[in-house]
Image 1 (cartoon, rainbow, N blue to C red):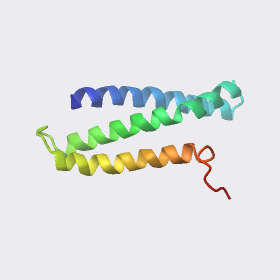
Image 2: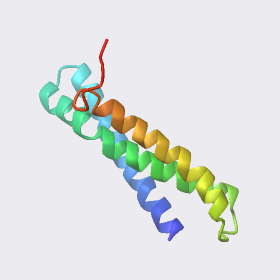
Image 3: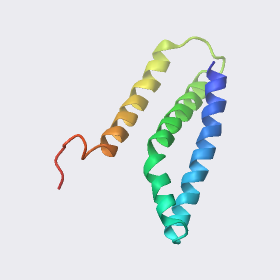
Length: 102
């Protein structure tokens, strides 16, 4: 199961990262600026989720090479990654949540 998650998240990380990189370059150069801005605004959360999955599975595989059950290790990896993703969610929806702005 972990191997499948790792491979799928790695593929999606590469695809979404490439799309976001290309969209940034296109927007910066004024080529399809509206479409590029749309991609940059919509694909940030899926990219963050895929990044968290890929990073977590890579770290777990490197710290547990025999792939034995290790619930404590998994908890030490998953909790900070969930906190990071929640932080990205809060930053993304800061104005919608009605949080103070400077």
